[in-house]
Length: 229
Length: 86
Image (cartoon, rainbow over the protein chains, first blue to last red):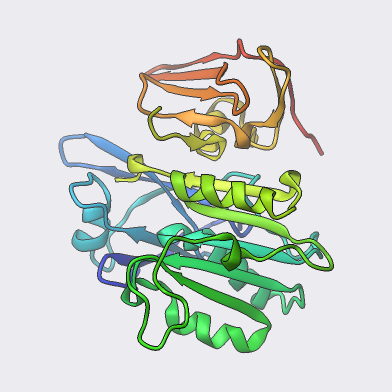
C-alpha cells in the first residue's frame, strides 16, 4: 500500500492485492471501509493501472464533505489494509488483444482514471492502435498524470487538453467547455469511443459525438456522480 | 430530473446476485421497445435501492434493493434479459 499525490485534490492509491485475478482496462473495484463500531461505507473506484500481477492503482478524487474519499486521500497511510472487491464491469473496457480499431478517449476531471488504464494497457501491450485522448480539466494545475501524458505523446498517443476555466499562458484556445471542434469528426477508420466523467459532461460529449457522425453503437460511456463521496 | 449514473454501477450489485457480469446483457424496454445493454440504462442511486430506467422513455427497467439478508430484483421493465455466455 502506497500513495502518490497527483494534484491538490487527487491521489493515487497503490495497492498490493494478493491473488488478484487480473483485469481489463476500464474495470472498477468496490472499496469497503469498516469503522471500529462496525459501520461500513462502500464506493466504486476505477482501476487506473493495466493488469500487472497483484499490483493495482486506484485514483481517488477528494469530495469535500464526502464519507470515504477524505479518508482515502488524507487519512490513509502506507500499510493500512482496505477491503477490495473486483474486478467489476465488462462493458466500459478496452482489450488490446481483441480490439484493433482506433480509439477515441474523452475524459472529464477524474474521469481520466479508466481511460488512463487503457492508455497504459496499450503501452504495456506495445500496441500500435491509434489512440486519441481529449481530456477536459478546469485549470492547468488539475491535470492528473500530466508528466506521463507528455511522455506518452511521443509514443503515438495524441493528447488534447481542454481547459474549461483557466487556460495555460500562451494557449491558443480560450478557456471554455468542451465543444465539437475539440472532438473532431471521425476520419478514415472510425474509432471506438470511450467517454467518462460527470453525468452532464458525458451527456453533452456523447450528444456531440453522435452529431459529428460517430456511430452511437460504438460510443461507450461511464458516468460518475455525487454518490462518489 | 436529478443526476443519474449509468448501468456500469449495477455491475457489482448484480454480480453479487448472479455471479457473472450482467452489464453487457441486453434488455428490451416494455414501454417503448428500445434495446439497450444494462450498462446503458440510466441509473438512479438516491432512491431506496437502485432504479434503472430506459434512456428512451424513462420507463423503469429494473429495481434492485439489498437488505441485510437478501436482494430483491424487480425486472418488470424488460421483455427479456439476453446474457452473453462463453
